[in-house]
Length: 321
Image (tube, rainbow, N blue to C red; front, side):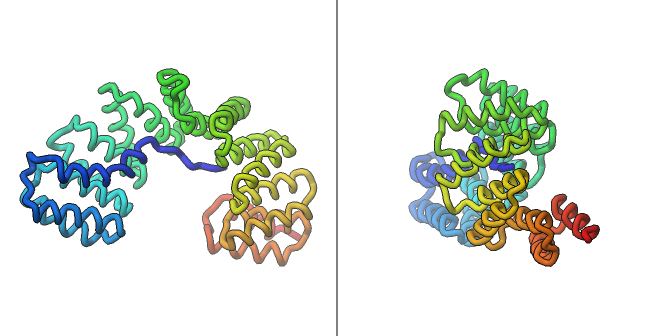
């Protein structure tokens, strides 16, 4: 299953640096000197070039003089998010929110960081605060959090709420995430309906084709699944997951020699592709090529030894004649 959740807040964070640059020149109440404006812009430039330590050193100096500066504080958040220091991002936002508990910007940024460092309870609490303050877009974000923690019924309710509120203006990504959630609870027809809607709105959405193909596969509609996977390849012929999924479908149809060609193609594109090795290991088992299957299992153990599929393949090979 493709699990590329489409977080609404990510766009906010991506644009944050541009806002910081503009704000550094526009917010006169901070009374920056020309030198300090230059230093702030240098901090932004260092972050954009991924020299995060240099950026933080400048900001730490500026915040001593301007502890309440919105511009400097936003710059700190931007550095933490761009450098994937999400725990520090949560900590920094929490410090601001202790003084301003209803600051919507920092609640949003803390949600973003909390989701990415696994602090889901914090993210849920902040979503609830924003929803109670009429930030209705947070229904979608709360849906993402609920999906991640396995609260699928609540996730579906949140996604449905945002769809009801926005109607035809709803981002197709919301439908896609709801479709993924329907897959988890095995409401396959509803999942197909959501993925089909996404494809109607975004005919080049590769993930929607892959996800709908996965639903067809689970319903043993392998020909339909293969059609969707091949459409994904038409859109991007360097997408190894699509080849691995086609291989799985051909195995289910009893065409393992055909499946093997697609496994090899997935691994030709990406020699460390996990799904490609899973599919090929399964294919070799079906073809009774134990040595080849064992070799692929060893690769899987290097890539992700704790994965459920890997453990299942270990057990099958252990009992294989």
